[in-house]
Image (cartoon, rainbow, N blue to C red; front, side, top):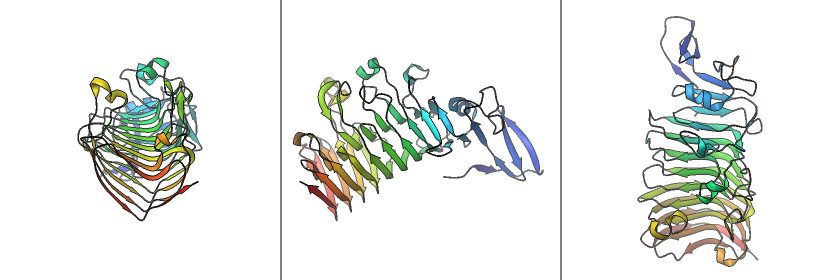
Length: 373
């Protein structure tokens, strides 16, 4: 995960190569491929440490697969779409701030979703890494809201390259630009053949900390050692109605044919009222309603060693729970739920299997989630 170099055998001790206008400095037999982005840079520069460029997108566009793009300390009112295997590395969560406010990525060509996006990698598969930064301020217009195009901090969207592995680590995912207009998502993974890992991070301020959506086409999603805290309800302008939608820490939504495989281990959920882990195998709401639905999709879930300290949802009809499981008719939900602990407040439940009419194959072992009065 930390590899930053590839090795070539060369007969000289030091030289400088130029690849697509980018300098790759060679010392001995080690080639280090690195680009630099800075708040004082210019996209007329070669993106070296001495002469950094100004935008992450420019660096991505000129990078070769395997390059590391260093985003130096500072605040960047930018978005970026990653379309090849590379590393986007900030200087640290408190140092590199990427804020997508007032940037409508759906007007771009090609359009993409997310302040930081991984989308449309049609080339060589490989490791894509996003680390060491805060990502927040996702923006959506009222028209896009009506089209159900929610704002999202990091989006891994329909990556059809099975050779890709996407890792988001050491990041803070913060609130969207206007939580009163749309609650938004910290992370959204949709229908990827790529495997995705979200780890050692914080997701805060949005309605859904991580939405693991689609599934069934091969890519597994792992969420581990992430803190989901201070998430927000969604109602009024945010939900498009007077309905109050409780916050979700992790929402697994299998609404594509096949089986979504998701592992949610060792995470912490605290200081909000809502679901910890919510799982739906099959779906009949949203875009899956009416003539478009219901959508089918199975789930294979592992949820172990998570810790919960959640407040009470507004009403018992919300069916809030630390772990909520729903298999709709014609769909199957298989789950191993082991060693989870903590507290919820009534009317919430600890672990709840909603009578959705589907097939449940659920194993619960050594869970200690207390329901407080």
